[in-house]
Image (cartoon, rainbow, N blue to C red; front, side, top):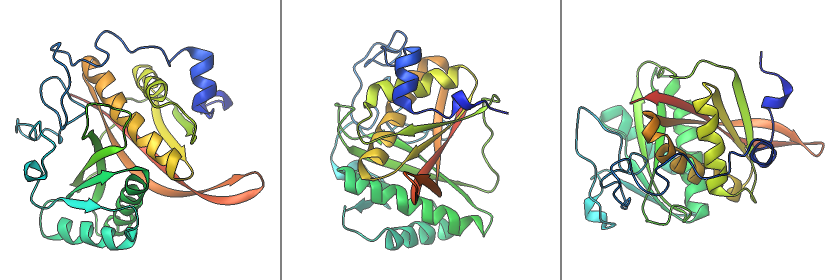
Length: 250
């Protein structure tokens, strides 16, 4: 059973254990030493769509013509339930769509939509997860492509240690948070992120995207399983977004 120290805020964890420092050799460069490009390009495991049977990555450009045909552009004011329905419809007849987002509100709606679709499709024996990929060379900007995947069986964790719940706040710094995630995965721990509010959810997603890049040299990748969770904060019951991170060996 995990002890109480594991259920700490990321800011406390970073300060206490120094995970906010630069990742191992690589930083903003891929393992091949090439500067990372939008949507993937060379050396960017955390960028492009998930690799499937050796398929090439998506184009390095930001042009929407380079995106999958069934991509959904998510606006910050769109109804998450409507987006979730489109995800479910696509999954039932073929491949899941990619979700393209710009801005924190858009990212938040995309995560909520995937969580809703995941809950609905689980009743039909389908498991949904996503991987965030950057749409800009600045990996702190809220421009994200969500690559959704579906499976009939749950994905296998590459880590088998204690469960760690980390709280991401609206003021959490993205790169140090990513370092904390990568550090815990290297310690063979299973990570869940808890976020309440648009800014916190956005920070969590951007941190996972950066952590994917940090872990490329360790031959790990991260997949995210989102779900809603009720938590008590300041004496009030609130709805948070729980992001369970599945570490996979490359």
